[in-house]
Amino acid sequence: MTGSPPPSDRPESARSALVALFRPVLLLVSAVGLTGFAIALTLGALTVLHRRAPPPETDIGSTPIAIVSPTPEPPPITAAEFKGFQGFQAKPSTAPPRQPDPEPPTNEPYDLTLRLEKGDTIDKMLADIDVPEADRRQIEQALQGVLKKRRIAAGEEIQLEMQTTPGQLDAPRLLSLSVRPQPEREYVVTRQDDGSYRGEEKTYRISPRIVRVEGERVGSLQQSGIAGGAPSAAMIEFIRALSYDVDFQRELKVGTKFTVLLEQQVTSDGKITHPGRLLAGELHLGKRTVTVIRFRPQGGADQFYNPKGESVVRSFLRTPMDASKVTSRFGLREHPILGYSAMHTGVDFGAPMGTPILAAGAGKVTMAGYNGGYGIFVKLEHTREIGTGYGHMSRLGPGIKPGVVVRQGQVIGFVGSTGMSTGPHLHYEFYRGGRAVNPLAQKFAMQASVGGKDLVRFKGLAGQYVAQLKNAPKVAAGKPEERRESAIRQLRAAAEQ
Image (tube, rainbow, N blue to C red; front, side, top):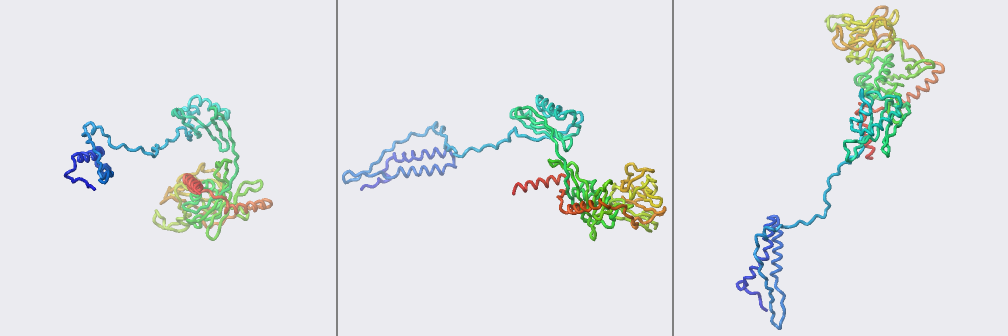
């Protein structure tokens, strides 16, 4: 068996063949740089090993003969070949190409609210938002068909549903228009499938809904009720009904809890047309609870009564306003400005500037205007024996002047600091026989009670209201914006469940 020839005896053509084998490697390195060097070197090495493998032996007789295939020497690399080499061609990716984020369709409907200004018309308003003239004519005709001779007042809000069509971004399409000048009546114009417009008048049924507001006093009782969701007018009624029996200065503390029962007016589609009329209310004063109930006797007017059917109205109010505290009592004291002891002939109620001051009882105005150290002052004559005075006002109430007759609880002025005053407060005086007496020490009798058939009807209504003060649906507290956010949060939570 014959071995391989020694290295010194190898032909020169073998070296040329080795160069030819690494020629593709050199080309690859030059084209793809160092990043492809490892790959090219591996391929070249595999090629060399394959070429240097010993050829198969063939037996001819008894002597093995090695058969070597001559390798022709490749031609040298030309500059044109090197320059024209493009390197690796990347294999096309089998993954689908990434698509750009889809743009929202341009014909998606959207809502728009416009206010009809003075001198505006529906046609002019729609022209301002580029609704085509042909559509505007049809819309106005359809709207006038349902309005008949009624007119839309300046300031009314017009609700629009619009749509932008592809290729006509400057000519939006109006899908619907609606205006609701009264809560129970709405006028709607809608685009039909054939492109025409049709007008329609919608009417809504209005029905009462009973709700309650629970809260606690922080600041004035009126402000606390409004913060809880009660309308201001209902809280004023509540305070007036309580004022005959409650000493707001000594009994009403921060944190005092209260509940008011309201009758709202609501349309069949849920729109509130009246925020709530006071039906009943409770004020929890620690050891006692004061309850007031609205009732109309046969042939009489609405009044407030306690649960026994006794009118809350007394001959005089205990206090003439929803004040925060007594700052100075009746009697001898050191005058805060003059600096010496003097008789204080009334009671001072500290309250914020502008707090309404109520007439303690029905009577006639005998003085209204500036009165020396009292500042702006009002004096009322209730009977020949009894009178009241109100000092340091910021201004008089509407229509208050000498000779005018006022009702009990009517606003006669507003808290101020005029005259000899160190800060906003009401100086309140009570006269008997022309002499000032302590207002807080007076006892006043109730004026009326429910009787006969009215009493039976009252007891049934009172029991119903007392129960609803505890279980009627609650009004959402907070500002309108906060109530809206709360409603959105509740809807989202329900959707996630």
